[in-house]
Length: 281
Image 1 (tube, rainbow, N blue to C red):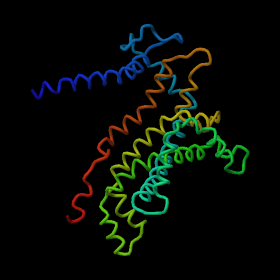
Image 2 (image 1 turned 120 degrees about the horizontal axis):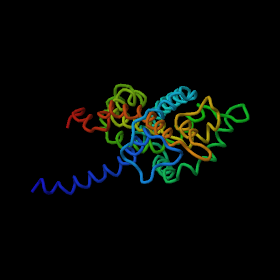
Image 3 (image 1 turned 120 degrees about the vertical axis):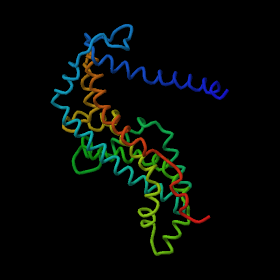
Image 4 (image 1 turned 180 degrees about the vertical axis):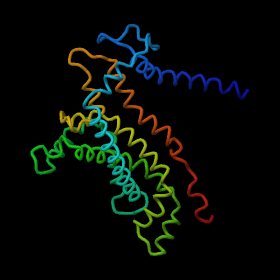
């Protein structure tokens, strides 16, 4: 009976896996094909031939090394500053009782209701006004990093606040008794205990920044020295016709670092119980 009760669950799970994995299999399969700018009809899941010409074409692009370097720099810097600022913000909302805390946090939550693309115009104008040049930070890597970090603070604070609020208050009181302040409490106690959730945030931040296209396209524009991998992949698309095997091959190559990241750090996702036993019952 226990096995029979699990059958519907496994059926639903398998159907969901097929739905999610089919587009990826289609992309992988057709990256080995050669199209005359038109995708096959009906769509093919299995390739009719195996050819690496599309991968060779992508790897020989002169802009690829620069785009990959820019993506690595922007992604790592964004993840570092996002984790630092968001964890400090979450600690403030979770452990410090200041005037207007709940009101400010509700404002944080309200910003999450707005689609990101609606904010791109004011964000563009703000970045344009920073600096001494006419374009400000537009077209620069620091400008894009600042945009990523700033737009992610509210959601990331909401993600971390609950975990930090659940940590025993006795640990904070012990630090205060010993003469420590909030920074000592944060870096010596709260940060190590919140490391699983912070690691999870860092992984999702790395993935989201690595794959982000819209903001990178708007902020960096056509500055070839600063373009990222998603922008470079979009440039492979022709004005009137597209060699889709090039797009598929470039997309798969760009996904390899993220696949390796999840494979290496899958055990770092949120776990509970790290604070158990830290205080007496």
